[in-house]
Length: 160
Image (cartoon, rainbow, N blue to C red):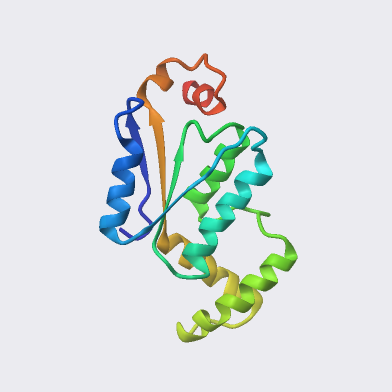
């Protein structure tokens, strides 16, 4: 479904990620997820998001981005997810040189689609492609909502 996203709620170990992988495979979508490490922070999270945004927008490939509540180790991640869901982009995620690179790689797609070829027009078209091709699936543990006292920022956010 174009511009379709989902919130998956279930118990830990209930097969949420396996179900999402299977659904992505059946629909012919590429499956992406974030890889949280010990020193994982905002910069690493945004790099993981950029990777999925490039697949969806630059390569115009159907892509499923899976994020679980365990991947949300900082509350600022929720703001990026919210922006992606609501406006289809994340403000200030791209550096100027990355924007130039994106414009050059997406310009042929914009030309084929009959869109403007200026940098702003091409970036608008890139964001349209991202919104059309990227599916954001956020998975949470049902008990996390009830047990928000744990240290996970996403779990604390559910209670507010």
